Amino acid sequence: MMQSSEILQMLRAAFAELFEIDPARVTAATRLNEDLEIDSIDAVDLIDRVRRVIGRKVTPEDFRTVRTVGDLVQAIERLSKG
Amino acid sequence: MQDLNPRNVERLQFFAMTKTISYCWRLFATALCFAVFGLAGLFLGLVVFPLMRLIPGSGAAHRRRVRATFQHAMRAFVEFMRGVGVLTYEFQGAERLGRPGQMILANHPSLIDVCFLIAFTPQATCIVKSALWRNPFTRWPVVAAGYLSNAPTFEMVEGTAAALREGQSVIIFPEGTRTTPGQAMQFYRGAANIAVKAAVAVTPVFVRCDPTTLAKNMPWYQIPPRRVRFTFRVGTDIDVKGFRSAPPPIASRAFNERLLQVFGAELGT
Image (cartoon, rainbow over all chains, first blue to last red; front, top):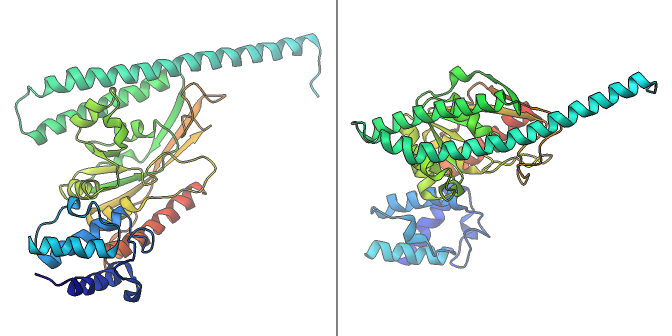
């Protein structure tokens, strides 16, 4: 199981590598679409990364209500528990 | 200045009359084409394809037969449109379409571009707008042919990538919708994203349609003043391997820029 701080670190690394986003811009309140310009096509690649990191099957449905980085952290925390 | 002697006036009147007759005929013929398309869609979807299911064979074999039939039907429809005089067309390089794992990208000036692409691409998978699944004339054919919806979802990206990896050729309009005349082309990144992940080859098809017909937001009866000429030119493959070293989101942005460059250079937009 991953702690939420670990998850945020993982996401910062993923955003930097996949989208060249400065980790300093990634906080819990950051909105994925409006602030980071991550669209539904990018989300596919992001979900793929999450799947590989937590090592279990995830579906787009798991992230349907995610709007901010904080939402994403919670969703991943739930998934890595469940 | 036109010399207004009676003979020239007569000639002008005759010219105006033939133009009116041509216009009326093409209006009627356009309506006829829509009717034929709709009825053929229903007939194929509700009669022909279900009957073909009775032929023994795997799901893949069935889909191959459906697509072959659909290709021939589209070819017949295209020839019908030409036959009744609503359009003329030229298709250059069709022999390079239909290779395994090939992503075929075309600009989209008119509603009927896709008919030509299907007619000239053996065994194509098309990414078409999701509304076609709700249209009674098109829903059964798109289901039977195993086409994919263009809604920018996980299913679309993964489904299209899987089709390419399986060796199918896929037709995509990267603009996602018809070109707005007079505006610069914009490509959704979906096509580029799938290309960097899964395409064996990426082949552009440059579509020209002169004068504009059946563009976005144009009703069917707003027909052009003269017969439309369509030109399809299959371009040389666009190298995608060079983009694969970066992670997909970065690679797909760069490849999308490249695609816009290629289409812009050819079509001047």
